[in-house]
Length: 400
Ligand code: NAP
Ligand code: MG
Image 1 (cartoon, rainbow, N blue to C red):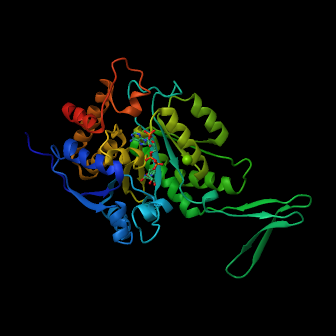
Image 2 (cartoon, helix red, strand yellow):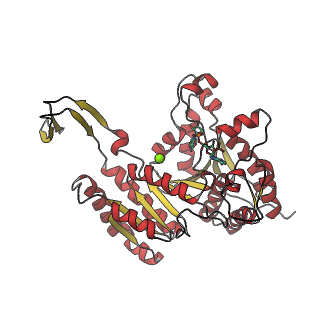
Image 3 (cartoon, helix red, strand yellow):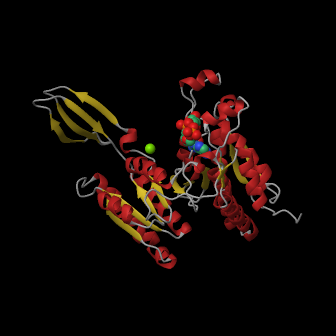
């Protein structure tokens, strides 16, 4: 075999849990290590080791990502009450993705992988739609309360000098009701904007953004203004050079245009819009196993992962010795995303070319009709054949 491709800077490798941890090792052993002299800085984010290190390993892995610039992450368990007993945890550790996102101050971009035979439910969508969700504030960090009839609700802002501004929300004269207080910060909105503009330039795609600024004249309007100010000051020239556009419209108009579009752009969404729309877009494009995700920090660090979780149901079957047919495509593309980005940053064209080759081999496996169960049930190919987790990866290896 020819010499393996050399790397200069390590990729931060964040291992994970359950079925995806098993797939992780198969991908490394069978699809990458035979061709690349893989250099990684390894962090075990599996729940057992997170528990052993009091979750310090998660923080360390995020800081390493800031240092090296590129990470690839396996899906991980976010503990709940049931996991507390299953893994005898010292504490209900926080979601690793939340911890990493907070340290990287990043935005998550989710994009579907498109392949012949898996037709989007919206037939016009021939190119991927990438959703960027602002993952801070609004309803997700709210204060809310039920109020009785006769109460009066006011906004009450105290400044550092003790000054106070009041604004009436509602007088509940003849009925009780509900009140919600939400916020966002200019810093977080600006980070979100920069991550979106950078990623648009990176991937040479237009950027769309929608708010309800006609109704929310201060709150939503501030998002619109911050995006516009940063775009004009820092990105307009770069967009012109890359021949891409930044397009702002009202959120309802954006939704209507998305349905009529061919895809092939990034759709930046407010926190709630992104939560809802990313599930809609993901299901319209097919399987969760075909959805990739990348966290882009405004200072240029990238963390690649699959959008799905650890596929617990399959893992329990695997542990009982039963055969599984778990889709590894999104995890493979997390690796190729990281390898390609590492190659770009370190000027290693062979590494980028390998990432390309592995993606092509993966897609041609499915286009040849060889696929896991999730795709088998929706593929329109005539000659399709369902294979198990291991054989799917072996079929890809045979095509590299
Ligand atoms: P999930 O792991 O995404 O799986 C939900 C279901 O979707 C599976 O049971 C399976 O359906 C299908 N599916 C997802 N990925 C698939 C794949 N690659 N191949 C084939 N089918 C796939 O979500 P979950 O069961 O709600 O969560 C499991 C664990 O993952 C939880 O502990 C959660 O905390 C964690 N999680 C982690 C992340 C992350 O690290 N980014 C994200 C989400 C969830 P069928 O059973 O019908 O085949
Ligand atoms: Mg959602």
